[in-house]
Amino acid sequence: MWKRSDHQPKIKAEDGPLVGQFEVLGSVPEPAMPHPLELSEFESFPVFQDIRLHIREVGAQLVKKVNAVFQLDITKNGKTILRWTIDLKNGSGDMYPGPARLPADTVFTIPESVFMELVLGKMNPQKAFLAGKFKVSGKVLLSWKLERVFKDWAKF
Image (tube, rainbow, N blue to C red; front, side, top):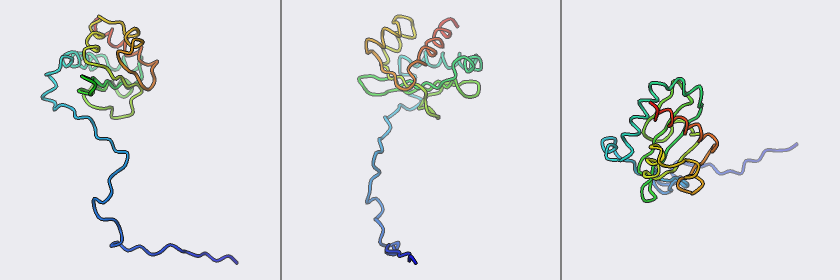
């Protein structure tokens, strides 16, 4: 018959690594986000607040039409300065500062100046994307639904 042979030595607690001896691999520090009291210092903050109010009023209708979670990483000089999430997939919709609580369907990385031109209608989103003015990752085709949300907000 076959015998089971256990060749693993017994490990004692004192044989383990010392606390802090190893660092976690693959961990990337989150970019420093401004304190909520500092959000009002950004040019785009009033726009985000207004869009947030609009989503809270008509969010249930938007959830039925859009069914997606968008994350907007607003940059300045190549660094993320603001991060907003537009959740039009769950509940009656929500918009909040910070990263998406659930995985975002589409993530936009966009300079603040370009974002302002887009939401104010001074720049065409498709042309701006094709010109490389901002980046989109995830489900790129959902971005046209966010454009419709911004257009509805502009009428509001």
